[in-house]
Every structure is written in C-alpha cells, then in structure tokens.
Length: 132
Image (cartoon, rainbow, N blue to C red; front, side, top):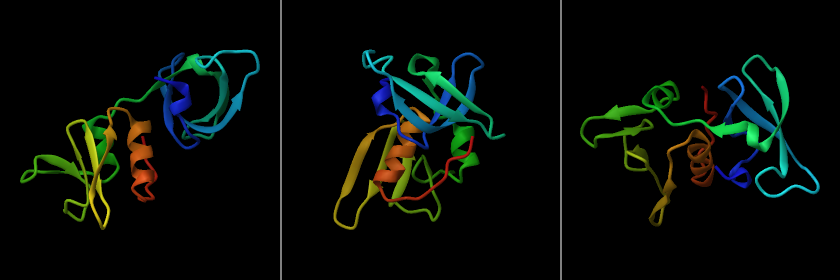
C-alpha cells in the first residue's frame, strides 16, 4: 500500500494490534522518504486516538461481511453486491467497483481494500459513511 493513496476518513489497520482505525489527520515528516514520510492520527470506534508512522498501517481487505454491514446486498440476478435500490447505477462486482454518471458508465478502479472503496464512492458523489 502506498501511503500517499490514503485520505482523511479512510479506514486502515494498525499493524501492532490488527485493529481498524479511521484516519483523522495526516502530517508530513521532514527528511523521510515516501514510505515513511507521514504520520497518521487515527481514531477507533471508541474515539481513542493514536499517532503512528506510515509503516504502522495496512489496508483493510473488503469482505462480504463489511459490504453487508454497510447496506450492500447480494443480487442473484446480477451476481454482485449492490447498494439498494437495485440498479446498475452503483454496484460492487468481484473486485471492480462501478458507478454510472448520467452520461457514461465509469470503471473507477479495482477495489480490494476498504479505503479504495471509500474513495470510489466519494468520486462517484456517493456520501456514505463506511462502518467496520
């Protein structure tokens, strides 16, 4: 995972305890390369805050449990997870997240991690708070 891919609001795993935390702050660290060049301020669901180096975080893999917990439903007809209402407007299929604009269907990018899905939703203009 490239740390410059991450944004405030993204979910990551803290490597020391393998617990998901949300990024609430990003600070550059002078004199360090791109891999270690940031510190992250993280918070968990209990509003506990941590300040960690970039190498201390890992991506959260997308699972069917996470999708279902966030309102995605498996659609047998399309064989994919979709956000209701069931339409081709927004769907998650395999490892590809799609979103339709009024003018064209856009393949945003491959999403295998929660932070990628969060960013794809933001790019599609879908305001959805992801819960882990």
